[in-house]
Length: 215
Image (cartoon, rainbow, N blue to C red; front, side, top):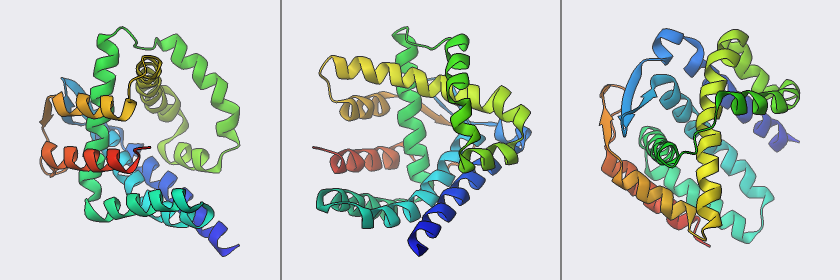
């Protein structure tokens, strides 16, 4: 029972930290980097940073529920989370995701505003019964969350999902494909006080993480 409570506490802490990353619109909407000329905001970077910090606690708890193979994967992932700073991992994830988003746009896979709204409606009830989602919404504020934060995040996520589906349908390795996009992407950091890691460090993390998830 103690493990269950610890797991729930870690999830709520993650939801709270993500909410705080987006709460102040002026600070959260500041552009801190560009990947292939697509802006990454402070909110996006800090929300990813918050996820990285809290994922370590969640991984440690999940390791107890998994079989040998799953536990080995969790152990290897935990080692990487210890080896690289949250800032490097956050930059790596934003670099890889935004590079994939850029490629999806080039391929004509960008989701329309209507498709995004339809998806938002389809998950609304699930969000209403999810305490972590409600915590984030409460901190950000309903208006800002539903009108600005969520649509932008989901447009990016759904568009990347469309590219992933296409890549997998072509019998290609998605993780390797995404790594190559990140490697070839142009990264320009404009806030060096917030983002102190380099592209080279981010790519090293992505490469090692790719090895962890090899079949």
